[in-house]
Image: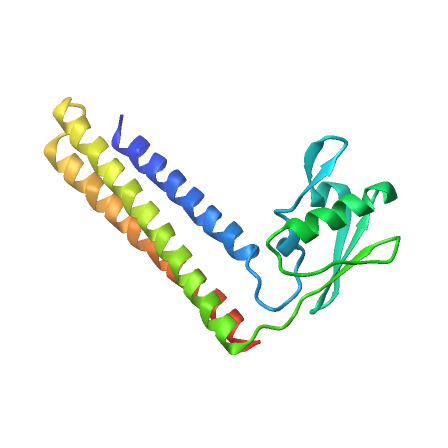
Length: 186
């Protein structure tokens, strides 16, 4: 593997780790209604678990409410059942045409717990990036052993990987700080 290939692979994998963190943050309950809160819910529909967002239109008319309008009205009961059995902690109100979810505002204690979860997720993403750096450094060592790279090229490659790691750790820290601020200000 060339130096550029190793760096590209490491960057691509770090981007994926960042993407996972973004998805995780999107689904966190912050006291504000967002369609992402119900993205992970799967509904038993004609015998197969189907993502809710493929079965219904999901809106947030105000910061405390999520409205779910199924494309197929016959799936309303199944959607309600899936929401009740999920880990959302919200009870659906079914009026026969749509389901309303009221997002309760968070207490100070819940907010502190949520910031702990956010920081833990951020740290896990940083660890994933550090593991990617370790793998890239192993590739550089192996390439130098196999005489594909010189010692100087290997060292320069390791420096580049370290710089890449720093930039991704900064991005992760920024995301964690932003999400923590969002949770604490409501």
